[in-house]
Length: 375
Ligand SMILES: *Cc1c(COP(=O)(O)O)cnc(C)c1O
Image 1 (cartoon, helix red, strand yellow):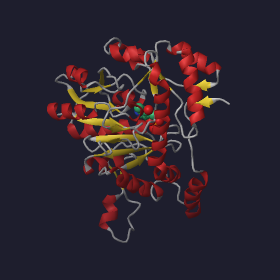
Image 2 (cartoon, helix red, strand yellow):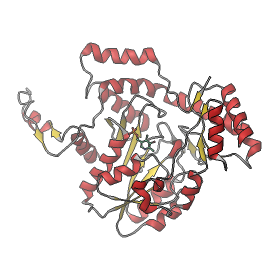
Image 3 (tube, rainbow, N blue to C red):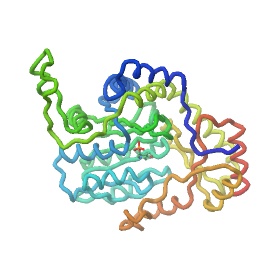
Image 4 (tube, helix red, strand yellow):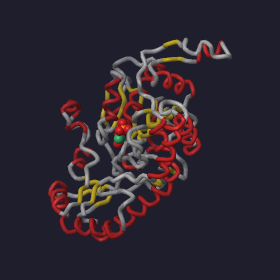
């Protein structure tokens, strides 16, 4: 039996029940379940705003677009970001004609505040922080830098559904937090995400932008009977980025189990930890920040023979992954090659081990043995 990196789990009957409600009602689009999911997400996270969207990629793009619009940023504005992330994070900066400036990562694979501070210039307006694998790294040091230098903070929380820091869901300190509910994330739907602005006014603009720039309030408000419902205004060249009720249905079910699921992920991680305990010279698990209760979207180790190990594991039908390749290795971002030596070093050595709810202790032990043998 082969072991995959990610195999999502769905409570099928419960998901189908939620979806059935949409189909029977004849409402599968924006509204209904999307509103319910937004409400439940705000309750769960304690964040003041939440808007359900079609992906985290569009969310990151909108986050920067709204901040750029509202703060009057020019195109030479720099956003400090990490090279060790899914490429969405950095593409989002380019979508908005802003300049990504790469800072190096620390032992948690997250932005290193010391290097971030060095990369701040008079053109810097924001920092994009990615909580890799659910780890908060030195997030609170980054928050301090944002306060000190008056920078906006975008939290790419694509891996952080359910992560807590000092017992609290992080994100309230950020100007905007963006979650992914893509097919293999730790809260999987099929494709969707959530964007959570600190400011209500930003959330208002964002909601118009995710629906072609349409403002349906203008005329509706002036006529109680709704006779002018069709007569909306269009205020922006918006997009078609909002989420739909079918995805929200799945999300609503997943959210009920999120804490329990993440607890099981942490259990899997502690089994790996235990198995590697006496092998730290060759297998170095990336540690989670002390104050962080990670969603454990990922379990990452550092090894010196990563590529050989990966092949050996594949031979045994175990399929790990790499999160992530240093983005400055991609031709798109190669102008920044060499600016983040630690990211480059780690990028060649990190390996993400299978991490999903269908794994048992026996499988973790089996995978661990293979790794100890081949590392
Ligand atoms: C998956 C991912 C995204 C993009 O999420 P989508 O919902 O697939 O668009 C962004 N950032 C990181 C770090 C991710 O892993």
